[in-house]
Each structure stands twice: as structure tokens, then as C-alpha cells.
Length: 314
Ligand SMILES: C[S@@+](CC[C@H](N)C(=O)[O-])C[C@H]1O[C@@H](n2cnc3c(N)ncnc32)[C@H](O)[C@@H]1O
Image 1 (cartoon, rainbow, N blue to C red):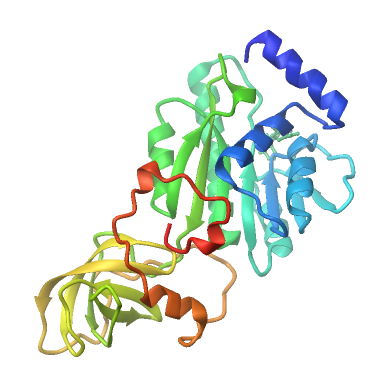
Image 2 (tube, rainbow, N blue to C red; image 1 turned 90 degrees about the vertical axis):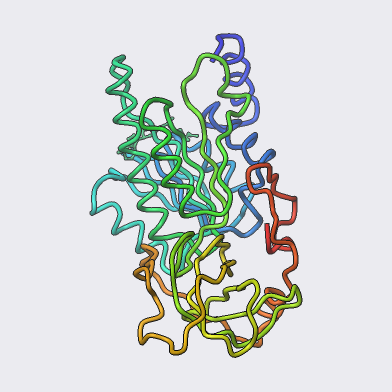
């Protein structure tokens, strides 16, 4: 970051009562990407001295946990753990806090920089991986993950792995961290907990029709829209796109009989440690899914709306 800019945010943080200038990065990320909603449960990994925790507390007002190698001075309404996020012992304590799932996992952790670019990048990615593994265990379906990454050779691989688990993933550099810094934030929204992934094959029977004219099948209570199918069809399908609550598929071939195991590609088991109640088929949510029409959402150019809860299919 240019010196002037650094000084600006440093003085601003003192004026506004924030513990670090990093607070403005989270504020700017949130202004652009709407990552925190009122009442959200939030886990912040690499949280000392607590600038992000202060902002998270202001924005959410819900349950908040901060974790760091360093002790974090008390913040009202925030729980803290002193521990290493790469250590199982710390993860166990985070899981204890996160029973029932969390809405947002933040990670601004940074390794001690050695000045060796390659080494620092690799150490950063190690922290990113630890945060990602933790996020997969504790996020609720449709949850959000925000993580700082130091750019380098391993960035794309990390970004791709995160992309496979969320509907919407973007990298973003807030103004407060711009200029010379190699850091960038990966913002991942709408954590997917489906039992299948893109290109998986399965065998299903069509049991209903959606308003869009696609056949509807269920796989372990997960909704799949199958284009060109009719009620009663038994079909081998290929998954084309996966959203948090439903997927789109095309027919590979019609079948006379369904195999005992519908998962022709092994079932995808999200790495979650908590379970959620099975959806009620008559719940408004399910009815809403069956009315889905727009199957051509442009995820790459997607900008999350203010009130995402009303935009179930983005
Ligand atoms: C840039 S600071 C975070 C600033 C914070 N977001 C704020 O607003 O105050 C990075 C933090 O990551 C922490 N950290 C680095 N490695 C860690 C690890 N393995 N486990 C936990 N925290 C770690 C450091 O101790 C440091 O406090």
C-alpha cells in the first residue's frame, strides 16, 4: 500500500476507534459484496488485534468468534480463542463454538513474512487451506467465506478449489489494500452442500414437472431439474450446473430399470460436521424452487443484490 494511503487509514482507524486499519478492508469488501447480514454468526480466523471483529460486531450483532495465535483484547459480545488455525486442537474449539453452523467465515490471517516471495506465498496458501477446510466444516448451506490470499503460483489452484464448493466466487482488492500489496481477497458466497457436483452421472425417476417445463427428480431430497423429461421417465442424467438448493441436468439415456444405487458417480459428501434438518417438501422454500425459470444466470458477472435472501436463484 502506498505510504500516504497507509497513513490515511492508520489515522482514520485511530479517529474511528478501530484497532487496525484492516477494519476498512472488511468495510469496503462488505460494501461491494454484501458479505455480512444482521444477525449472522461469524468466525474470524487470524483476527488479532481485532479490527475485523469490531466491524463484524457492528454489522452483524450476532455471535462472533475471533481466533489468533496472539491474544485478542476483549471486545464486548465477541468470543476469542488463542490458538493456531492449522492445529487440530484449535479446530476442535472452533467446532465447539460453531455447533449448528455459522453464516460467515472470515480469514485475514497472514504468515510472518520472511521476504522470500515464494516461501511467503506457500506459507500464506497453507493458512488459506487451513481456513478453507475449517470453513467447509462449519458453514451453513449458502454460507459465505472471505479469505485473504497472497498472489503467486498456487493462487489459481486454491481459487479453483474454492469455486467448486460455492455458487459465486470472485477475487476483490479493496481500496484500503490496493497499490503495491500482493494481497487479494477471495469472496465465496452460497456454500453448496449438494450430494452431486457438475458432470456427475446419476440415475433418477422423474416424479414431477417444474413450471419451466423441466422434469423434476429428487436425489436424497435434493431437487434436480431434468430438461426434456416427463413424469415417469427413468433416466441416466448428467449434472450440468449445481446451485445450493437444486441442480440442472440433461438426459444421457432412458433406462428400463433404476439401479439400486442412483449415484453412478460416487455421492459427493460435503465435509460438514453438523447436520441440518431435512427440508420439508411442503415448505415455501421447496415451492419456490419448483417455480424457478431463469437457468441462464451469469455467475461470472454476478453482483450480489442488497437483499440476497429474496434472490434465491442467484
Ligand atoms: C493482518 S493480521 C489480522 C488483522 C485483523 N484482521 C484485524 O483487523 O485486526 C494477521 C493475523 O494472522 C495471525 N496468524 C498468522 N498465522 C496464524 C495461525 N497459524 N493461526 C492463527 N492466527 C494466525 C497473526 O497472528 C496476525 O494477528
